[in-house]
Length: 388
Figure 1 (cartoon, one colour):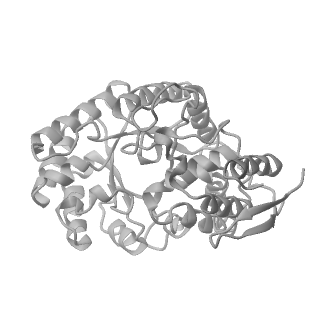
Figure 2 (tube, rainbow, N blue to C red):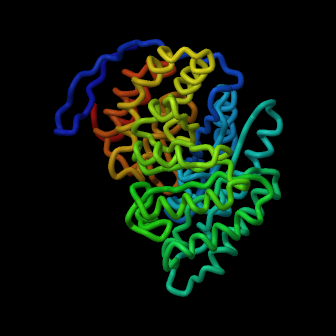
Figure 3 (tube, helix red, strand yellow):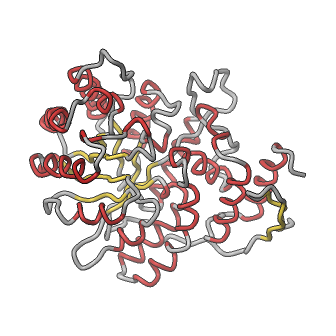
């Protein structure tokens, strides 16, 4: 099959691009020991469901679970029903409950499979009448469900809390109550407003230094109930500075999709573990790199992971909250699903030139499992957009 395509560029021109033919990284599979590494995974929409996509969600359950089995086969852990699965962007709590139930049950059938699931308040619509008690009850409902199916909790940021909290003390009250009730240590997720504008001013302050101090107090006060904290601020210096102030028992899970090799690789004072949406896209490379780290082969770790950075920065480029489109597009190119349709119709959230550039960056990072097959799928997307 011809490996040259005419791709649309940002300036409106069409440019010929020839695939590099680079062989993808090969992971040995099996457990990863040097780091705890979660991939925040996407969901596969049912393209034939007779629904109204902006208002309803329907999943292809087999394809969705098959992708989780693929991630586990690489030794990565699964972060389920997070923002990568479009929580708050078309994926409702009712469907998320069924996903969590099925995925936790699936994990039990696979030796060594690790899963943690998002619990938040997305079934509670923010509004002037919403109180802290309402937020606590909404969190408690979701946490109780995750625990009832045998899952572990990732405590997601709450739009409703951001809307009704009057200051840092309200966050301390809500999180303190929740952490006092959970059965097992949780992962706290600080999702920045570049991922969700409704979360601006989280922890009771728009000033990030003040917000950081509030979170650090909560972590210190409730350390035995906290497995770790995932920081999604795209701010490497802040993440590392916070990590150095955590109690020894609390992990930092990097959410820095712009510079994860540095934070995961670490320094003389420590390292970050990982909970990343980009690990969905680069799962085989992430696995191969982390297995190299297990062997203390930092050269191989950097060689494999380094070329994925340009791709990640593109997928997570502004507006960052639309990165999910790139995640699903990668799954489509690599044959993990038969179509490029998304929950909520979000396949339209990125331009054709943006997707074409992602295709190029995936090729250059050796992330196309079958280049010929990926090229044919790229041609289909271009044809729908009117590119001959």
